[in-house]
Amino acid sequence: MRSAQHQKRHIQAVRLRLAVLAITAICLLGAGFALGRVTAPKTAAKAPAQVHRGRSAAKRAAAKTVSAVPRAINPNIEQTLKTNLQAQNFSGTAIVIKHDKLVASVSLGQASVKRHLANREDTMFEIDSLQKSLTAGLVMRLIDAGKLKLTTPIGDYYPRFKRVPQLTVGALLQMHSGLKQAPMATPHYQSDAQLVDYVARHLTFVPKQFGTWAYTPANYVLMAGIVEQITGQSYEALFKQTYIDRLHLKQTVMAYQLDPTSNYASGYLLQGANPYATQQLTSLDQMHAELGTGQVYMSALDFYRATRSLVTGSLLKGSRAQIYRPGTPALMYDGGFYQNVPGFLRANGSGYGYMTTLQLSVDGKDAVVILGNVQGRNRNAINDLAGQLRQQFLTTK
Image (tube, rainbow, N blue to C red; front, side):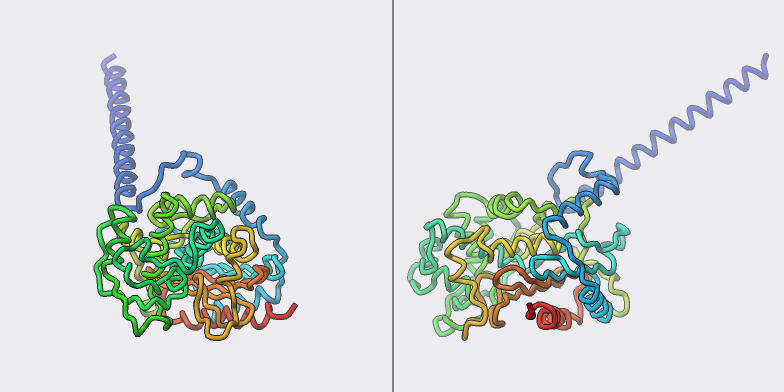
């Protein structure tokens, strides 16, 4: 009897210890999740089914995105693309579009070492300055609606430039405004209006530089501010309505709303032989400070679809002819694109561990999109590769 009681007490003690261990494990997991949420970028609430999406669901989502651009893989083009990217130790995703069809898609390297993710066709990358073309699209939609003109003085929206009537919307879009930006620290973000005002106060008009092209991202921050003033809506809301909702983009999100569990690539800075040794971290203030100029994550296909919609007439009407004129003598840049190659619009971006490039035919039927997540010495080589692919495969019909 005594032995039976002892055995019973032993079993109860074991059960108690197991219960304590289980509760402790749950608490530790909860604390880790909370810590991850605190240290990760701020995100919008997600339904459990979205956050903990299964492998098959992820594949289905990717398939839906791909179906928006018909697939007709050309083994020759794809192998050429892959061989050249591998020679550059490229990490990221690249696609080639020909006659409105996806003819090559190559993904190489790691999207995230910590999260054990490889780059894929549907991986989202920070597109950096490629975003300027989409900001210009929001501006041109206002021109199509008769709410703005290329000749509108920006002094109508920024009183500090009221006495400079030649400083127009068109001058901002072409970046020959003569605006010089003084050194400034990243401001603590309070609102878009506060940010744009801060940027405007650090800009000086230099008359002798007016009409001369100079790459100054602040031109597009001012454009984002004008769009918000005219519409009474935030840039984020307009971007979502115009591109994400209208085009049904599935791999596009603002940087400051990035879900830490989603399929996105972290940015790295190449140092030595290890391309993933140094991950680049971006604060929320930095993300917001890139208003209209580099604060969006997109997949390669989503970005192609967004820019295609601008040049084909899906989003823009008569205004297209005013800013998309590739090959025009003396026109270096307009509407977020370099325009010195006949028939093709070009754009490049780099920063925060990413480097990106685009070559897009003016009719939207042909394109090369390369989105990388290791920023380093091969940026020019990657940009040149996009041009080589265009010349080799896309300029012949």
